[in-house]
Amino acid sequence: MAVIHHTTLKPTKVELLAGWLPTRPWYRGGPDPVLEKSGGFRLDDPEGEVGIEFMVATDTTDPGRTAYLVPLTYRGAPLDGAEHALVGTTEHGMLGTRWVYDGCHDPVLVTELLSLIEGRAQAMAQSVSDTPDHEVTRSRTGAGPVPAEFTPEPADDREGTRLPAFEGTVLHVHRVLVPVADHPPLPPRDALGHVATGWPGPDGGRLHAVLMTLRSA
Image 1 (cartoon, rainbow, N blue to C red):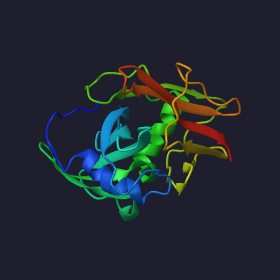
Image 2: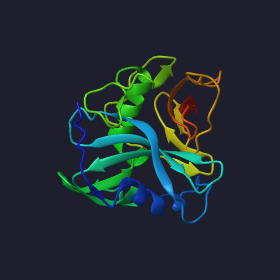
Image 3: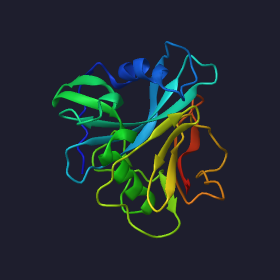
């Protein structure tokens, strides 16, 4: 189980994201977002080396408070061949320099995400050690395991990130989150799998959305 260290980060995660988000094709806001960390969850790396977080970051400069899904990985050394996916580096108060990556380009995150969809990995609380997050829901139809060696090849466009998965499927990562009334959120009828969760809304309630949808290629 991953241990959550309550310590300082310089720069903070939202400070890193404020400079990185406007460079993404799916970003909808202006050049200088003011972000807040609204929610999310984590997954455990079985090897205990890579931090895996799915953050909901809300742009508060937008009257509609646009929420973005940002899968991130945190590493103690650079990931070979992933320079294009580097969000930035930060100084962790206990662990030293951490390299922060767009997790859709990190094979550790992608493998564990697909394991979550299959029901073999457990979503964990974002800010509490050793605590499952039972608000995260998932589904998968069909059979067949994630390949043991998986190299992500994501493609970004205005609609989000598409990630070739297994058995001819594509995982659609919904970067701009659209809250829905259903609780828990239900996947589209033609989906082969999904991940969904909720996060605090501005009025003290909770917002809910489908974060990822697995579809046929």
